[in-house]
Image (tube, rainbow, N blue to C red; front, side):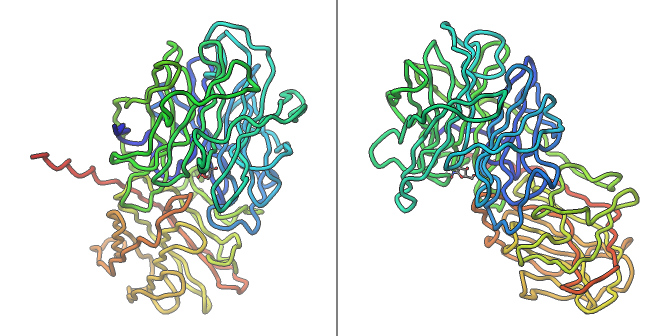
Length: 499
Ligand code: 6LW
């Protein structure tokens, strides 16, 4: 049976969600990979309407993404709350590995990362506090006292080629923010040969312990499996009828990587990732209801509508939703009277930190546009509109010394020669079809070219749109001014009438 998850509650580049509750407030974090700031934090009161409150890693001292390649960097996080403190664990891949940051206010400031030893990825925390006003499913959800200890779990690879992994656990000391005691191996999947058992989360359910993991890998075989134990260290036995969420067969694909949370009324919900095929948007955050049957979670749709927010940004300030590629050591932008980008030698495609600011495209169809005030002062100076998956895959509509150029990496796809002075740049995105256009500030749009952009299909991240400038390796004092950026989402197509 396919479970239709409807619209994402956090659309666009929002993979690997983790959620916790404190009283009536829910807080959610997602992975962010090679993009800065790292680990966006969202707040909601109903699990449907979310507002970005900040980022856990928003200072260069917290996050060094130097040399970070596409879909590397920060993998899946977990957020939990205990004794007035938020604990957020994550893994900086190809770097120091697992770490924890803490905060009393999820909007920040968050602490400097504290390294936690151990291999793998997808770390999680579980506070075994037993009954009480819990902030999440691990607390106050059933008879029987917890012993007050806290536990750190993670996935680690046993055989990369075969996708064999296992879930391991050690005790976590919250005040000291370190691991202690022996290591336990909890689980290696619901069946022999299980692949990519990851995204572990522990919960107290009906006086016992429930381990929820993803299985099958984050593509079409993605699923959710569950195991139960009488003691937190195991042994864990798979529940009858795994996977509890089979690979998706409905319009939303790749569903998995679930995290459970209880509502103030004691009902259960889950956030999980899913994909709406046919665009470069990638993995987004969806919501489902959870009920229990014979000790196993049963997922079902939650009816909701997700508004499509139009964005018109005149850059009074730079909102947290604008992302840089890698860690900027100092701002290469100023705001106030529009957004000014400094032209710097760094450019896309060389694993540096270019003068690029982009934000997630939130719907498969969108219309993005900006106005550019920029005059190239030397060969190689260019600035304009960017549609970017990562350092290697992007489309750029730029004003250069030779006029307007539409480029895919080094390949020139189209040219135009608008009059000097300010110019509007735009792209109409319909799935993978990207139609680029330009216009004089008070003139009519002139289409330049339509590009089939399935090369932007993501691995772990998602397509983003924004602005870019470079001096191509030479020093420059030039700047590019973008007085505004506009991102609109046409209404979804009417569902075809089933005959
Ligand atoms: C994430 C892990 C995964 O940490 O991909 O395929 C990683 N599964 O759960 C990045 O999203």
